[in-house]
Length: 265
Image (cartoon, rainbow, N blue to C red; front, top):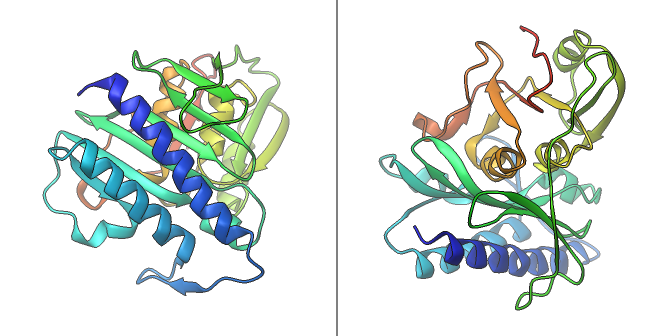
C-alpha cells in the first residue's frame, strides 16, 4: 500500500463527502428511512457512500472495500481492507446536533493502521500521516491544499481525576455503572467517532463503550487514536480490539490513554 497516496485520497474523499452531507444537512427537511436492523439512513448516508466508494475503488481497485451502506454485499474477509462509515452518527445528523463524522480507514492484519475522521459540521478533521502518526488539520480544509497540521497525542492521565467521554445517543445505565468504577474529574458526551478523537487529542482520558458498535464505526477513530499513542481494548479481557471479524461486529471496548488503569467490567 502506498501510504502517501492513501493519505491524500482519504483526506480528499472525506472532504468531498462532507460537502455532500452538509448540502443535505442544510435543507429544511430530508427523508429518513429504516434499514433492516431498524437503524436510520438518509440521503446523506447514501450520497457520501457512493462518492467515497467510487473514489476508493478507482484509486485502490485491488483492495477489498467494506462500507456500512453496502454491508450485506461483502464477501469473504481479507487481511487488508478499506472500511468506511460514510456518515457515522446518523441520529446526530437527523437531530441536527452536529456530532457526525465521515470515517475512512485501512485495516491490515486485523489492526486499523491508517484513517481519517472528518466532522464537517464542527470543522474538525483528524487523520494519520503516511508514517502512521496522527494529526489534526486546521484552516480552510481545502481539498487541494493541506492546511496547518498539528501533531496530536494522548494525555498523561491522573487516575484520581480522569476525564471521561461517552456516547451522546447511547449513554445508558450499563455505561454509567462502568464509569463509576473510576475516579472521574469530569465527563462529557459526544457523538460518533469523535469520542475516539477526543481521547487522541488528550481532551479525554478514556472512552468506554458498553454497547453495540460495528467495525466501520470505530476503525478510522481507532487508527487516529493509535497514531496518537492510544489504545483500544476489549472490555472483557483487555486484549486489543481486532478487525475483520465475521459480521464486522465489535465486542464492548475501552479506548484510553496508556496511563489509565483500566478496570474490569
